[in-house]
Structure formats: structure tokens, C-alpha cells
Image (tube, rainbow, N blue to C red; front, side, top):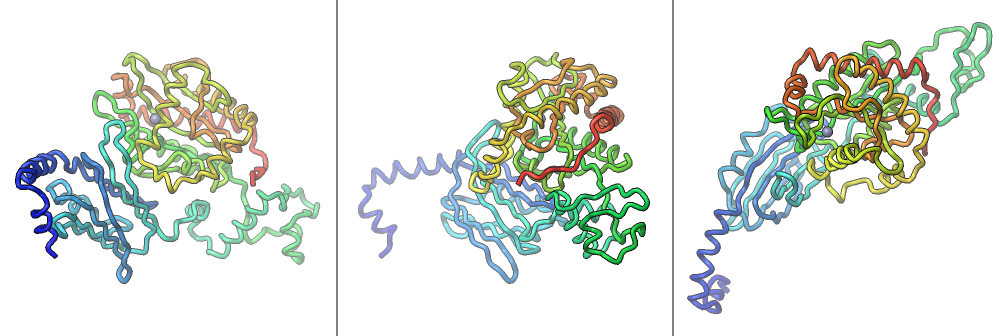
Length: 446
Ligand SMILES: [Zn+2]
């Protein structure tokens, strides 16, 4: 029958009196701390930060697509209500958000969607400055192919079928089934290209020219829920490193035969593994992670460059920095269920001696150029176990452009002219590296 009446029958009046004030007290304490929205082309993240743990149920409805989330044992408050005002009209996935007290104990959130999505919903235990977080990620059902995006950007006039042909050729090239020769006049190229077009005259210009572009993956550290280090003046590492990375991309794109891609182009969180995956998916020749970390001593300053270490770190400071950078996934918020454990294992298992040797050469070249525009924290490249530098087949460096914890350097980091100087120095270092170590045909891992 009436469960409330049953409860009244079984629970003594004295106990009820005790229960009510405790409940009221808890409701005051356990509330939403903040709600945040991180829209990006790749995925939109909604974060509800709550003083207590969040219990929930969710379901997806089609025609039109909407995501319904019921927050259980929850009361609607002004912080949560404010979520609706955080939505931007140009959000790639979410059209509208509706929030209401559905019944006495349930708050219902309805996300009206612009398109079919692949949602990921998970919670994160309190860490660093954050309380309990409830996270909804709206991923596109059909994600963009980063290599295709790179090719389309290069030449918007390319037709789809030409792009797919180029991709097939590029794949053949990486698989070692295609050996493109620079083709001196008169020598018939003994290649797969010739086989597929047997009637093509030897010296005729192919319909689609496969260029071996050098691709540099630029990885602006942190983003979204993970601010990185925060300066005394309120500067966020994630913002200055994105600004420097965009400038670095412009510098590299200006160089003949070179192009750059960013592992993130906006203020959203990208897991460390995903950063490496993105670089590999475009067959990057280099991976350059850009940071501006903090240190305990505010006097610590200068630029530094790090590469992966197979064993221990070369200094305690390097180890300290690596631990801080590796915490990005915990702070930024990774769906543990969704992480690619298999890939992580593959990346960790492979020998990386060759990668480290190349990375050291790249690091030296970049450090040398940074030393011309900024003082150096350490005169040589340091090594530690950075998770983001683990692509076994891509020379990878992590640059701490400066210390955001140093007030003078924090100021410089926000200065556009100084950002440009840093970007140009890094680009020069990369060019110097390739001048001495021309890229060879990539050998695939798998
Ligand atoms: Zn960092």
C-alpha cells in the first residue's frame, strides 16, 4: 500500500524526528559546486561537480535524438539550473538542455541533440581541486578521420575519390608495398603506381601527385577540465600553450614540404593516450608537446626540453615534472572503461631506444634555439617517464617553454610577441633537426 504510511508505522516517532533534521542538514551541505560545458568539434563534455557522490540512470531516445539523465536522490538547485545558460548556440552536438525536478527525489536532465551521438557517461572521484564529478561526453557517431581532414585542408579542391586514392597509396607506402622513386628522366619507375596505370607514359605528370610531406604533431598540453599549472597572476597553462602551439603550427605550415596538426585546437580535454593515437593516425614524423609548468620554488625559470626515459629520470626535478604531467588524465577526467588498454600495453611494451636517440637529437636542436630567445633551465635535454612521449615510432619531445610559477615568466608567457619568439625558436629547431636527419620512409608498427 502506501509505503510512506508503512514507514510511519514501523519507524518510531522519536527516530523520525532525528531523521528529518539530519536530512535537511545533509541537503544543505551536499550540493552542486559548479556545472561546466566544454564544446568542441571532437566531443562536447558536460561536467556536474557535486559535493557528494552522484547516482544516476540514463537513456537515449531517437526521433529526435535526446539524452535523458536522471540524477537520483537529488534536489534541483540554482547551480544546476544554470547549466541551461552555459550552452552555446554553436555547440556541435547539443541543441538545448532542459533541467527539472522530475519527482520528489529525482532531477531530470534532457539534452536535445543536433545529431546522433555516442555518449559516454562516468563519474570521477574527488581529485586535486575538484569534488565529485559527473561527466557526460557527447562523441559523434561517426568521428572525423584526422588524416582525411589534413588532406582536405591542404587542397580543398581535391575530390573525395582522389583523396581516398591518395590514402590508399599512402597506406601502401607505409606498408612497404609501394616504393616511390624520385624518377630520374628515362628510368621507368618499377612501382605499384606503374602497375596500376600500365599505359601511362613514363614522364607524364600523374593525375594525383603523392607528396611526402613531413608531418609534425603539435600537442598543446592540458585543456578543458585540466587547466595545467596556474600562475600567481591567474594565467592558465592550457591557454598559453595553446596560443604558442597555434603560432608554432603557422610557422611549420609556412615551411616548404612541411605541415603541422594540433592534437587539440580548442579548450577541451584530450587524454594522453589519445594525443599519441592522433599523431600516429596522421603518420606524424615528430611529436612536440608544449607546456609551461610550475615548480615549488617561484624563482625556478627558463625553458627546458624533455624526452622519454626507458629507466629512471635524469633528475628529481625531471621526475617531478613527469609525474605532474602524467596526472593530466586524472585531473582532466578519463573514462576508465573507455581507455584503450590494449594500445597502452603495446606502447609500453615496445623497445624505444631508437625513438629516444632521435628524440634526443630533436631535443638538442630545439633547446639550442630556445636558448637564443629565453634562458635555459638546464643546459641539456632531460629524460623522465612522460606518458605522452611513448609513441615508439615517433621522435617525441616535451617542451616546458617557461615556468608559469615564476611571476616574470608568467607575464612573458601571456605576451604575444614572446609567444611568437618561442614558436619561431621551436620551429627553427625542428627545421635544423630535419636538415641533419632527413625523414626516411616510415616503417609501420603493426
Ligand atoms: Zn604541463
